[in-house]
Amino acid sequence: MSLPTHGLDRDTVLTTLAAYKKRDVPWQGGQTFAYIYDPGAEAMAVGKEAFASFLTENALDPTVYPSLMRLENEIIGMAASHLNLGEGGCGSFTSGGTESILLAVKAARDFARAKRPEITRPKMVLPVTAHAAFHKAARYFDIELHLVEVDPQTFRAVPALMEAALDERTILAVVSTPSYAHGVIDPVTEIAPLCHARDIPCHVDACVGGWMLPFWRRLQQAEGVPEADQIPAFDFSVPGVTSLSMDLHKYGFCPKGASVVLFRDQAMRAAATFACSNWTGYTIINPSVQSTKSGGPLAGAWSVMRFLGDDGYLTLTGRLREATQALIAGIGAVEGIEIMGQPDMCMFAFTSTELDVFHVADEMKARGWYIQPQLGYTGPDGVRYPANVHLSLNNRDTKVEPFLKDFREAVQAARGLPDVRPGEELHGMLAEVAGQPMEGELLEGLLAVVGVGVTDEGAELPERMAAVNRLLDALPPKMNEALLTGFLGELYRPAR
Ligand SMILES: Cc1ncc(COP(=O)(O)O)c(C=O)c1O
Image (cartoon, rainbow, N blue to C red; front, side, top):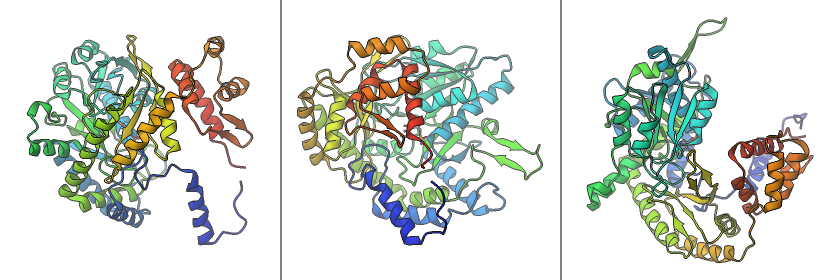
């Protein structure tokens, strides 16, 4: 594809863009239970307007745009007071959970380099439920991962197992509040002090939960929920928590590109900061990964937070909490379907030993709902976590009854569908090709088996994804990752 010889008119450009969206999963009516966080039309409009009005300003140099520095300081201030970050604490505004996590891990690695230079092979201890962003950080920063099994019933990190994994090479331990897959909170009050006693930093990944959980707890308190059943402490009030990531573009309901990483003290943040004056250009000092940084996400986040306010977030949380309780009860009551663990927030997963939950996801898609398949996983000690389907509630007007009606039908339909797990023949073929580069005919052949066509135009996904997901589910992670990487190469191609 080349540039149009003459610039197009505004209407042509914008209508073409709108047309490009046609095949996207629809979310405006609350049918998409992942990726989207919708606070309602009014708050969304405020966020958009604010975002657009600061789109061009650049936070690259805080002295040139004091407005952006002010917005960032006020956002971090609101986050700090929300999560009990005391005097001496600090934080940075980032583009998302992954960037916040990358910075926290880099800070821990460089902090250890300065403080514990005897560590030549740093390692990070995390439950298998911790987000893949920590794996990304480990690969980017060359840190060994020590994955720890979680309780196979509750899916929470087990303090004794985490403790056993901490050693003299550990530069960081990780807990999640909640973990994405099952929406359960790790016991921060037990694990962070164990780290503290060993002088090991402990990061709380509160990317999804950090903003909403304090509101959730207040609703529980108002309702008289016994203290033992309330959301437990997970923030800087817990001794030993040294850093925390919290996304504003998730349950802060802000426009995308908004997260914060908070540090208990300045020294740790300094280890995440990049300053460079060893070149011919302008002075560089970046608290985050980005250098040029649009003011849009800052203004969008600031505006939605100020617009919704404490009462707005409390109301939103209340609505999502009620809808979650109704959905969990309704889905759990369907024969053959099991809710996994006891979810702590408005996100959860279900599985089944009787039918293929990936067929259920396809059947729901055919009925206009997007729910998110998650592959099964075998932990480092052989614990098997079954394939499942995830839902994050994200719309103030969740349509519980229409969803449940379609869900019951989808489960019924899934029972009648064929088994799409790879048969012996495919398993044999996979064993033969294990370790070979996933490209060319091998890649095309494997994709074709599950209905993914590769043409000169790129890859075409089948309408129904159960067979693709079952193949991925059956592959060992390394092979799976190779297949996905090859597949991505087919998906992303220069448009001709
Ligand atoms: C617990 C948790 N941590 C980190 C992330 C990564 O966030 P992002 O997709 O904004 O990079 C997610 C995303 O869902 C998450 O759920």
